[in-house]
Length: 589
Image 1 (cartoon, rainbow, N blue to C red):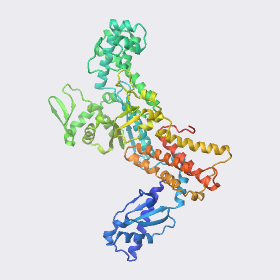
Image 2 (image 1 turned 180 degrees about the vertical axis):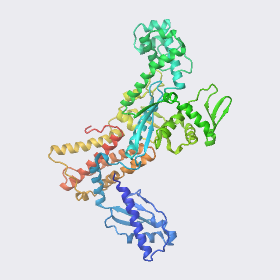
Image 3 (image 1 turned 90 degrees about the vertical axis):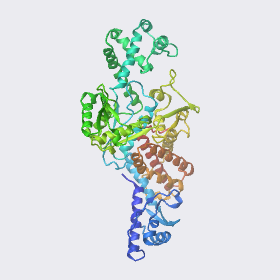
Image 4 (image 1 turned 120 degrees about the vertical axis):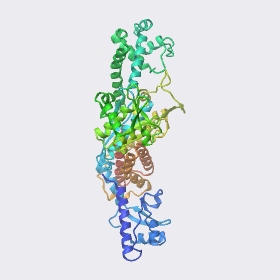
């Protein structure tokens, strides 16, 4: 798990502290505590590769000009055995260090030696993290928000794994509560419509579901003949389930009670929907470790247990026949109902039980949820409940994800041709490549809104970021193939030969390669996979720039081999990133 930039930072601090110690010992500076100073990468490469403000923070205790202090430190520093070839004083007192050829060679050696493991870190130290994402209601198909949530959640889980965490992916199946009641009501109403005299007459024709809907409900999906109340699902998938149930069982369920009919319809349709969620997500290259059903929390007594635990915490009270959770004790804007006056728990209770299960029962060190922007106010309630239950609320992190606007020809685009409302994950993946979907949805940090350009996603041009990155990999493969055809093979990497990599383009790429472990750590720490996609684009950009500026074939042997080794290192890192994001890594395009 090499991190040569961090090692350079550590060496910088050690070199400066050693020099300061000698300067204090010989009486140049007074014996005063050394204030904390920083090491950083300068914005301008002309100012070195690592810079420190040590001299400036020492100005007050040493009662001296920072520029003078910096020069005395620089004069005292011995770079022998370090990763630097020189250090200089600049500006008001910065000390700037410049990497030696040995450091650049070590980066290439590390990438080629560690191969698919390059970039991994031990930041997570094996802590167990549960990432829950998508968790779409199983009452209908997944929409465009789930498409973004799926890409963000799956790629974030991969980043956390690279950063040394033990990660599990989980889908929370909301198979209980109000949405299932609404699902059953919707199915029952549609089924009874089909069982009517007019409905049976159309059903007998054996039409496709599209044609069936047109004939029974009108060309535009009108429900004038069969009106529906507002508190139901109106999607074609509901009609399709009701029709399939009718085709299999006929009208016998029409004679049953409303409760029995709804239960039969839900038992028939819900497994089909859940299977569809599995299928669509696997198509999207997402595989979960666990599909956790809400119903288990009701069936095993967890919901009732949580109610009793919250009562015992002293943060509940009864009012108007309902049980309330005093979330205002924890900064919420108002208290929340836990159990209604009819004795039925609100949706909040199983959600609290679920998060308690994650952190207190299954004992994950961290639980990460990917939530839509409409759940922003929900965060305080869940964190408050954890605190009331004696669970450290800092173990729960919630990533807020904004919606995405699909754009085609510069205008908002709706994929649903019937209703203009439902843009499903499956429909999206029929429109654009899966590679583009996974990459594009991670182009911006989760809490930012952006336009998803459908035309750009399918274009084969340098303007398409995923194509641009994939093309860099394919381009390297093409170079290697052509050279092999001419009898030229890549020789084992020779650190001494790497000294010929002197151009700004070559050094820039190598420094970026060295930074991958830090990018992984930052991405994991901030729960932002976009840092990795941006890194991939930057690396591809630098390689294309290098390819156009630094000839490989036809150069003298040492230069050619060094540049081939550098190209192999770039190829390896691009492959590592695309593999992590579950994006294909073509060898030809």
